Length: 193
Image 1 (cartoon, rainbow, N blue to C red):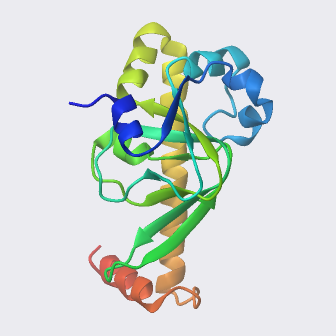
Image 2: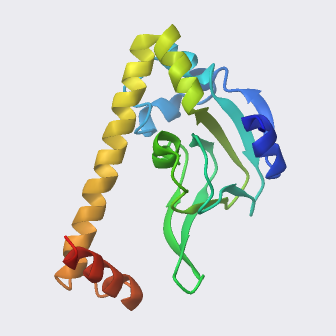
């Protein structure tokens, strides 16, 4: 079985080492990141000590839809395009994310296939956090591990809330700009509830 470093390098990404200096290198990251916004500098440094720093060039794929992965990414710098393929295989943009955003949390936690593809729109640096690294944090730095798990839970809960709100709008016809395939798919799934 390949290590996370080998897996990332096989995807063409450059592994730069650990994210030492996470708080010192980018102070705004602690304020702008939903994942880190209540971390102290010391807590962020502890977290950075178990995360890999990875660089991607424009157009490179960071996360591929439908693949399995037990890791997530925190965007340290640059801009990332998040897309999902339609039933016909056409990509549809879900979001454009910047420094401080995190992606891949669901698959890291449940080992299910990735929901979307994340690609670098410009040179990007990310911190890669594995499930094993979280287990290490919980053992060695329980307060930091617990804080991280709470933040991940809050992020996932907010995304679920946002998705539920979008579903309600589509069902009510309040999202006329949504593609028809999306509307009919959401209506169909909503009727199954």
